[in-house]
Length: 340
Image (cartoon, rainbow, N blue to C red; front, top):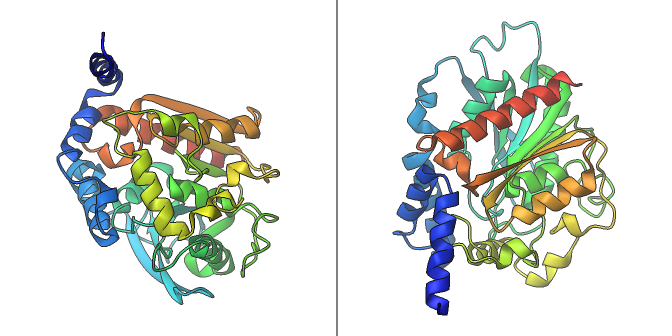
């Protein structure tokens, strides 16, 4: 059997392992130009389009009138100057409720180069409804206009703001965790790294109570084995990851920084409960495994979606298995809250 035949056989085997509905969406995405060939503004539009076509909007979550959203602005010490946070409440009578709502900081994915409140709106609504929490989505600064470490600083500024204004927001800061997918998971982890972030222009002023991380982006050097695997039908490819890293870091030598690739850090603050979910068809797969190993089983529950691709939350309106993984993620957040 020659190399071409070997490759074809390998691709056929991979197709058998991936959830059929996700595979269909991935093949559909392959008909459009890969993100790394596009200007960043166009990549952002395509990312939002993927969620519109295959995401949770298709489940009717946008029409759920029990979820209310309120926007607030956070002043920033960075080039962003000020940025928006959006609070998703699982009830409409925000000001009438005498009991503060549990809160969850949420940072969207997109390699710190794409992604927005819009691209993750349906998933934030889903999490708010499922966990009965106020999900606070952060519209942090993106590269290349706002390069590394702007996103990290904005994430910390947003978390500090929510704690400082807990009474106004009617949330309970004593049960607040942080969550995100991909780059958002990376930012969530860093919001709990007091020592690692000391070099930044902002201090972490309050402690989070737990972390819930979806296929985290934790190593921008691209040195892991999962980066090297050639899998034709995954949404996120090593080329796209390099595209994100270039836009975010500006200088690829910074990928060695512990703040850029925290899984490389000699010391990490891993003292709060954590749930992490990884996906098989994902160059970031090994990042999540390495973090879970460093954390240990006592404080970190790790679930691996061996039938899914990176970005499956954007396919959950089309794929039953992707939706089931989203529900499992929400259940894990409820479990973390109940353990406090």
